Image (tube, rainbow, N blue to C red; front, side):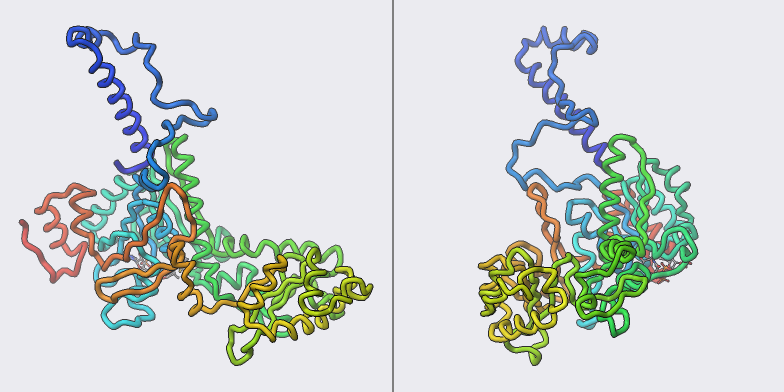
Length: 495
Ligand code: COA
């Protein structure tokens, strides 16, 4: 069973067969024989095993198993994972967490380049690799070797989705053009991450920070009087991987209706711009006057013709800043984000000890406050500096004053509630031992994610050749001896 459609039609067949054998069991043997001789078309009274849902398709009866006990969301979907580094692996890891069988194809002897990047434990796959490749199987194939091509063609026939994030043109140079793939398997979805979509830069190789810079994030991040900044969150790589995962499941859904695959393309520039869309909103607002929620408005600094960098101003139109708490600046993370949201202005005044500001016309309205934001936040900071970020959070939350402590990676790693939800998980690995990873951030109530360690290079090569492709031991040995799957000197004897 390699894809959802097959899974589903098999389930339907099984249901029908079950219904048939049930009714047969109730009838005496003679009647059963007669019934079997009758043409099936005359049997009109049997209830359909599935009901029409909304005109778009038919669904099986709701499962009677408890939620979380009826398999995984993407069970039956097989992914040919040609991804490397971060963007593509983020996508296929998510699909694996949802139950897809992800077969990661890696170059013999080398593998995904990240296996050996930023190595912290000598001889073990790096955290860079392990944290992006959970729940996958690894097979090594030289995609340019004739025997390797043969194995790949067989895998294409057995998979539902091919995911890749090679440099532009690399897949075609391997001979894996859309036409070739589509001919072998018309149901195959071919999903790609590229740096740019069609246009002047389409042939460029792209990494995270390039995408942040070309997607509008860097120009709008940082302080007005400083250079553009990139963010710590990998919105270019992991962000685009997320976009691609949505594209893939959407294409899988469409395939249940059309029966055919399609190409899915996510350009990193597009993904970043999508995440920076509020800044494109502000770009257009500029035509109609200054952006009043930006600090520079209150400070009387004129706007240029492009969305400026806004420091730590809140993007939602309510003035917000990062303020020092007890322990700052010695503790680099003793800060809290504080939003002076208009509906709770009265509560803010009471908490910080300025009840008079509630009625003082100089402070009482959002408009009056805009030119005085520096003064207001300085006063609020006097108060936050008397509390730790967690004490401040506790007090402010009682009054629904929007705020959030600046959490360090150390604090996140130690956070017990994130452990309980599986957002931070401890994983055991045969060569590196225990390490922390980020689990599946998307929680489904009927498809529970378990995080399994990343595969060693080529760990599942034999298993995939025999179980997925049905090759016999002698064939496997032949292919291996050809040098297509491993270093040529590692010859194996036919069993
Ligand atoms: N067997 C044989 N050859 C293989 C192989 C395999 N299993 N896997 C990869 N290769 C080859 C490719 O065919 C390619 O050869 P070619 O240049 O002769 O066509 C070569 O390895 C290098 O692949 P490439 O993707 O160009 O890697 P790179 O290290 O030069 O570039 C990126 C890395 C990330 C910059 C580039 O892949 C890219 O721009 N990807 C799209 C955008 C992206 O995802 N960027 C973010 C990464 S986190």
